[in-house]
Amino acid sequence: QVQLVESGGGLVQPGGSLRLSCAASGNIFSIYAMGWYRQAPGKQRELVANITSGGNTNSADSVKGRFTISRDNAKNTVYLQTNSLKPEDTAVYYCYADIRPYWGRRDDYWGQGTQVTVSS
Image (cartoon, rainbow, N blue to C red; front, side, top):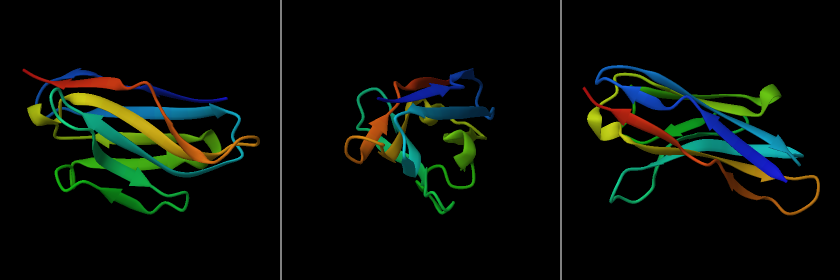
């Protein structure tokens, strides 16, 4: 069984920062891409950023220059540093990881989500 556990969400004022973390554990042989999506109320889930096992990154235009994704392969953990937060960044943030387990098939696994609220 594979688990992804997120942490770091919360309430922050506009212009503030948060660092989200997501650690994968369990039946893991190899992790490929990891990343973050978000879903605001009444909106579709959208990609925020992702990162390959080699460190290549991709991010949404709306967060470029403000959010930075990184990962620690030794810890099976992906991070999202969010700076200069805006009210429109308010959403539930979900991490995912493309994982090949020791037994079972390769698939995308998801965290439970962490709430980020940007408000004064």
